[in-house]
Image (cartoon, rainbow over all chains, first blue to last red; front, top):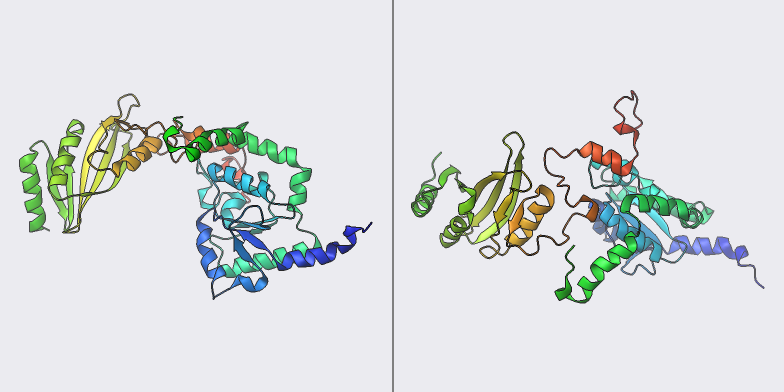
Amino acid sequence: MVDWRLFEPLFNWARKKSLWIVSFCTGCGGIEMPPLMTSRYDIERFGIIPDPSPRQYDLFLITGYVTPKTLKRIIITYEMAPDPKWVLAHGSCPLNGGVYWDSYNAIKHLDKYIPVDVFIAGCMPRPEAVLDGIHKLMEMIESGEADGWKRYRENYEWYRKNQDELLGKGWREKEARKWIPWLVDKKKEVKE
Amino acid sequence: MTWEIGEEIVKKILEKAPYAEGRVRRERRLEFKIPAERIREFLMIMKENNFPLMLQISAVDWVRDGEIELVYHLMNIELGTHAMVKVRIPRDLDKAKMPTVRDIYPAAETYERDVHDFFGVYFEGNDKMEMPWILDDPERGLYPHRKDFDMLGYVKKKYKILDRFDENKDKYVI
């Protein structure tokens, strides 16, 4: 039998060189993505591509404020991904609420609900700052420090408890029941 | 400042709707105040008088007066003229009701749902009023944009964290 743990440094090196980003711009920081992707900063030279599929991505960018409604989608998208996966949060809003600290509808601490590997402070961080954050994340991946996905698995009860506290018990099933008939047949719009 | 074309438009509309008050605020900006029950017939008159576009229904909460002011923003594209039709209704939840105008301006459907979500004004005749819209289930029925909504109390209760909500503390980390 091959002990695959021996090859872990090689895998980590390869992982850091080909990060795929899920294209789900969750807040105002989505506007920083076009300059990152296009000729000015061109993050494709680091092997990063924006990928529309939540089943194949590695890197999840939380670009700005998160509302509870978006948080549901974020959690579902995060849990869909296969296992080494990393989260990078832009701006002060996911850190502590930012300018929306007293808003009824913006969550204050993102890392209570999903693990975050790198936070970038500022409102909004410029593309250089995002690039710097990605560089930091790459180093952390290679050294094995970026272990959010591991923490999520180990402390799943704690994360789940926080999620349920905020969004109400059984929110996954409730959401599905609410929207699936609407997606399937427009005539059966659920009045709730 | 007077704007002659605007004065003419206002005069023409007020002839058909003598119950309304109208004036020119400045160039390309008209303002009408009407009683709430005449809204449908007044908007029909406005539509006949070359205001075919509805931009927004916005709401202002006047807590001391006990009233909510609805502002229907209409646009005359040819002259680039913006008309505001202002209506006041009581802000009590059981009395804050308006007839829908979605058959006159189809775009109003969205704006009416919006005002219902955030201010609690019920638009009778709009059958999408009860459907989920912007707010999620826990916030629906709270009307968070009303002035007397206890925002900080709600945030403390819902998110249960953050030192910065602690008024007795001297030093804050953030």
